[in-house]
Length: 412
Length: 152
Image (cartoon, rainbow over all chains, first blue to last red; front, top):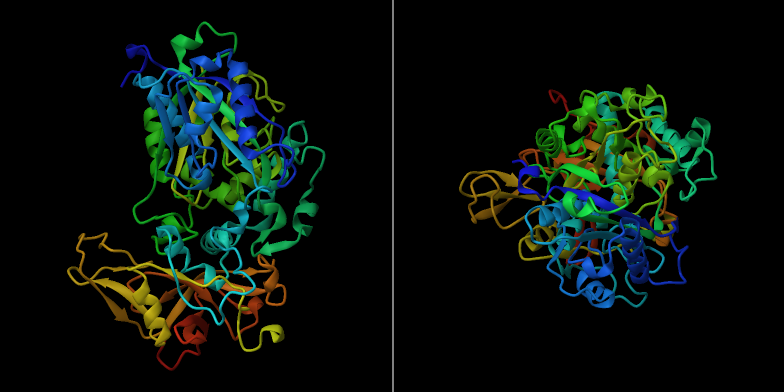
């Protein structure tokens, strides 16, 4: 389907970020105010008045509801509001895709996508869902509770066995990948060290002033084998936002509009909520990002392939899953993600596929990957602190190991 | 694990929550029966349990009892105490086990009675029950010696 022919080509016209900090580091304002600040910053960057916004979109069970946001911003009429069903960081690119669909089909003209996380004010994602210890006076010995949600009933099959949330679940996935393909710690370390090096050039990065060598990586404390501390992403406070509108609307603006060439979202048969609540999917899918169908649709829609990508922002909650995403999106053969990373391919400026040029979730900030979309826009505007010369196409992916989404961004 | 007596985990661990589709699995556990949900119409197994067969969409299902043997599909040695109460329990092993007879479905559990450093993918295991209360028992797995004629 030609979007241009209909005159409503979706573009990202503005980006906005608050400061990023270690979890608990932003206590002076609420998570909600932080979301508002990011939205206003993105609109200011785009040169679009708040009064022109008619859509809001988010993901990851964002607490900062669009309805309140619309009222507090004084939006005249909220015509479009969506929350992606994709869990956690799986939905960042989907939220942008949803916004793109809205402007493309005329449901809205200006949709702001936002994500705000103050994990010190609420819970830390890395500690897993629903695992708060019972109160000290809880009846003992333990019995069976009534599940309040499908997710709670599903994680009952993992939590009582000490599989608390993402680091443990994805360590098991990575162990299987190592078993099948011979993936090594040093190959995972290449992801951690390379992206840290990128973050060291980025003044916004939480780990911007903390260099890391391979020896530092290997010496970091074990969390859940094979994951060390530096295999795991940061947990952060901060917010960011992007403004999605039509190319026609953006033509009058000062900021360079970045085209959303394609978006795709979805999940594999039987993949459920991902490997942290379901370990019964086929072997090829278990030891994977779960993104191969999303990747196939994305490349089909965008009209480009992995060889045409100038720079990539790959969701990096865990190093091992980065390797699997590189495989699923076709940058190397299945099982070859480790050797591909260890070859230096991901390093700016000389690698074949400079990746996470902002430092990613491992070293810039963990804003559920919406900051990866922001960095993609920055690259195509020529404004990254690790700028890939002449970059015209950027792949952005959302969380591996859950139902997920991805975007191809392009410079017009 | 001296701090928690005979328990593998301390009482501060989250207790399981169940709904109408999953409660039967936990009730079987209380009776020391390891079961998997099986479609009556087409025989497909599924885990975690749900209301409908993903293969033939039948709503009719039953619990099938399993022999309690299986193999380790993958595992991790957890070395960080994600709850303060686990400080004396780490390191412990969380594994995905493929129970024999479950049609390829896997279950998350712990590997016990072995040094965590010695656990391997494809290791043969068997269920061992830990009674948590009259209404709750948890299936954990320990290494199983292979008898004559048994192979991997």
